[in-house]
Length: 425
Ligand SMILES: [Mn+2]
Image (cartoon, rainbow, N blue to C red; front, side):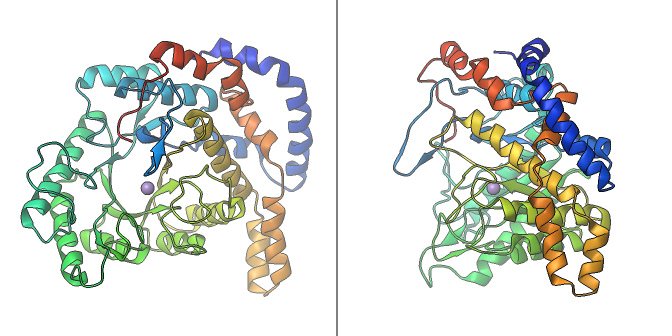
């Protein structure tokens, strides 16, 4: 299925008068506050969020998986699904592949499929958290950190292979998330595991092209429940610093213990120029993979508040943005549209914070004013601004509305079948 400009235009048409009224009202308000509305629209249009190949199908839990039908069964179909999202929201111009789930067979064909829907390839992700068929050494007790040198070498070779695949696709980053850890006290030497991890990463880092980045993800628990080798941002930062200029920390919102102050982590990493990437999702309890902004939208705003401040006040390069979630109840495409919308709204809210007034309130210890300035931005309904940025870039004013009106899921089920399942989950 292809969504073209005519589809979008005819779906936007009946909404245009009501939209224009809401937008003009908001624009006048923002203008009075001294904000440049055209600039805000451009900034929103420039924010592109990569879609991971594993979020396009219905995910599962260890208790079961209930497929939704019409899922992309091949890499080309996954690319086409991201193309559908991008046609609707003009903000999902890249796919992030997971190797070995998505190894391309024909690079030309894959490149053409991506170009046809105007998307590129974001960071490539290695997978050493499960064994592949006929694998010589098992990852059961770890990969880059394993006490068995054979398993370590295998995991290093896999990551180098992922870089080679990424080079052919035009990717510029390797994301490493390790499942390595232990479930019982005494099971592992903390020091040896960390040293193995560093030395293994070093071997991979040496093979990284000069214009690439290595993004090091952290997670405090799961799949192991006593320790993980890279449990927190500090350990990731330590490894990235030791590895060199091209290595940076990746923050996954779900990979924190409850109530961690993630916005402070973002600020600290940006101060050091070491925030490399972001995995967006939301959670109530842990790594729940819920829709971005569905549980803690204020936290998301506070994170973007630090990001926006960091963009102008630090030398941190622009991080790689990606959604990392796997939904087991909702239509994954609808969920991704909602996630991208939540990210852009939080970004827009952060862009309208009065930074001069905030800096003054901070200097003069005016606590009520400082809190009020942030809440004022957070409580401003910027949906008409986001809709205008969508409309101007040829997207749908209401992406989910158009998705349903065009009967995208029904069409995909008709084309691919009710039982078509996305690989890798
Ligand atoms: Mn992640």
